[in-house]
Length: 227
Image 1: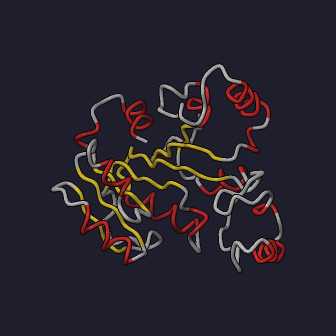
Image 2: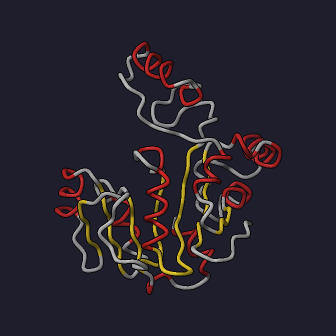
């Protein structure tokens, strides 16, 4: 996250304010507080936010109980928002994105990591084709594999994810990360020069709509052109 945001802004991040949506027990927000001027983490899980408040105490870091679909922040409150693998967990993803747009400053950026419904292996339960199935079959699949009873995640296809973020200018870092994993500290997943590296770049070029995860920066801008 830091490498991507530093590459985009091209300046020191220490003067920027950041909101981490779905901060859970605070590990990521704590790491981000080493690089940003002020960091706030919110989550709907009280036990998680209580843990974060007890274990990560810094002058520039705060945690609060909060609903990302109805945030208790003024308009234009943050320079950067982290929304990493959150949209599929909320009841109304479009309302979530409207709230992100509202609390971002003009020219502000949302680091948006989004899973694709058309992933061969569903990321939460690691079951093949789970997210592609109709909802009733997904529930049945979970029960038969003893992974759960109800499949609550609502993953979207690439086209629908693009529709979800249509208010923003989208800067795509997915391709950049896969092309230069070492530059963005992703080489623990993808080693340059390997067969996996070549295959990943081939698939991104010719089958982008089937990429399992997208990393985009969503810029709050009146200029709606995409890159």
